[in-house]
Image (cartoon, rainbow, N blue to C red):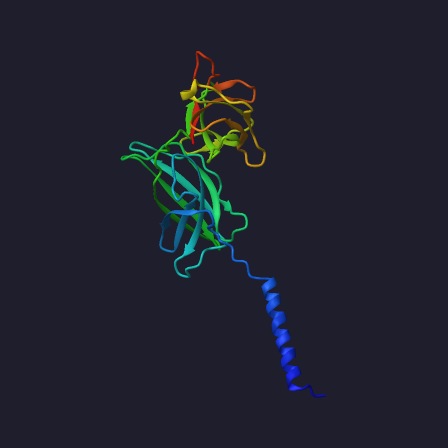
Length: 283
């Protein structure tokens, strides 16, 4: 049985059209691995380039959310199956010490990107600086890369360190809000203790009381604040921070242990206008 030529052409055209429609309905989705991120710097060794990223493209004293990926110098491709650990170290004139940091984990929805946080409790200066060592494993082979990183002082107080009444050295770091608003803001804080110069661990089941005040406006406070309690999921401390107007705010803090005893910080009164531990925000 033979088909007329024009019928054959029509069938082919319809098949091509159907194929085109099918492809349009199922397009290949290319994920932007670096959406919302800016490069901080690169750390290199003989085989790889480690790229560091953050939302601002910089680091600063206090809590820093950091993303990273590793590029193979030979293939020019980014590694997908890689296990990463990092080790920040402050190189002081007479000693060295570490700081609190998270594990490095795979970023959800991304193939090559990993992320975590580092809390730099002090800023660099002309004589002292931070270094970052990246230890990573690919297909059973271990590698390391190390370089100096820039950690300038933050413009507002985002981290506080102190010795509690129990003799333990603590570190509190403001994580959220990063962009405060006239509203009841979600507030997140990291609470850590120094076990040694090289080991800082998360503190469990404490409480962080907050009392935000505006020193330039008669030291008035704000309503509807919620003290911070630890979350089971991320081990950080979460609460509510009420900011009723723009300007400079001092977030006065008190750290309480599991027995509800105040380890550091003072309640605000007319006689005590500020706590000995606090954060600052201005917007």
